[in-house]
Length: 66
Image 1 (cartoon, rainbow, N blue to C red):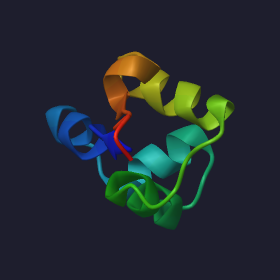
Image 2: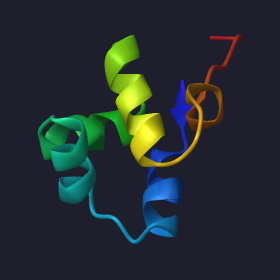
Image 3: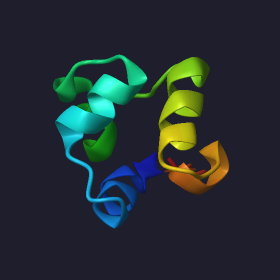
């Protein structure tokens, strides 16, 4: 799974720490999400998408070949 978290964070001039605080997780969780090493719960995915003013479908790109 790929994400657009880093791209959208940059659009809003938001640090990983700021995003983490807004969604209630540690900065390391945001790092792992951005690197595609962590699959978020639906609740966390929703929170991140809401803060970044997008949809879950636009934020997380699923690679069906993997």
